[in-house]
Length: 290
Ligand code: PDD
Image 1 (cartoon, rainbow, N blue to C red):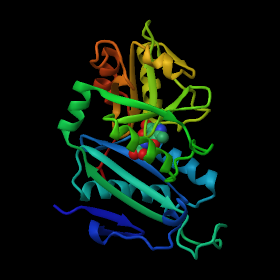
Image 2: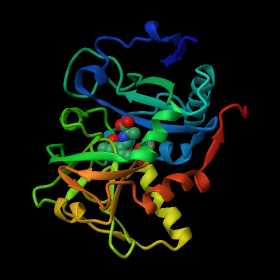
Image 3: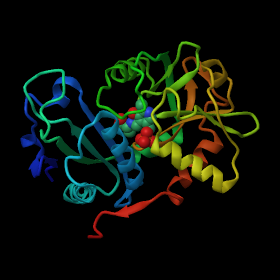
Image 4: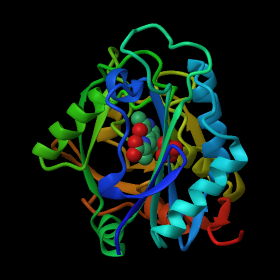
């Protein structure tokens, strides 16, 4: 079955889905994005993702390309047209098309909207659960507004490529003091000896992950202790467990950080449990309920 993408008002076969050469997303990374998980034919936590999109847009003074209600319909339509039951849906909004100039284009320039969706194979996600992942560490060289989910991801591209070459799945970035900020495309967590979940506060140096928020909610409901504080690479290497969270990987147990093997080198029981039960409390929006 051929894949379908939405581009500025049209549903197109993937190979015909193009944006203009002077789209500001293409030229300046003047664009923001969201990725939602699709689980069992339902979009996970769409409300929270669109809330965060609204914040990213407003921080950069980019206007909504369509109304929020229309965008919700488009997301569901793209998932449905691609027959994705388990996978993800991606949306990107750029400031639009204009002659290349650093300053904002004329008021009234329409922002661009692209939406795609694809399946993720069950065996890939099962392997993460069974084997866990390895992470490498690297200095965080990003700009200071990492709280905005922009498509300016070159630092993460380099970090994750470095991880891949070292045989790892994710790169944990650390700040000048040696504290972990987050993963290239995920939030970072450790579990202390007494079972407390530790993750960096969302106010400094990280993206406020939606999956992170869902885990905090889950922990609150289950009475699991959480400490929102920075932790160093060294502390992480000696932690009882570690894991990363993101819409694409949900909860992925970490079994090795650089050369340090955590515990017995197998996914920890707390991270595994969080992954297994992750969908219990999240918002699940059926794709075909319209
Ligand atoms: N990335 N931190 C960074 C830098 C990220 O890029 C992401 C998500 C997260 C986790 O956020 P959330 O739980 O809302 O997915 C944290 C997406 C999945 C991506 O770029 O593909």
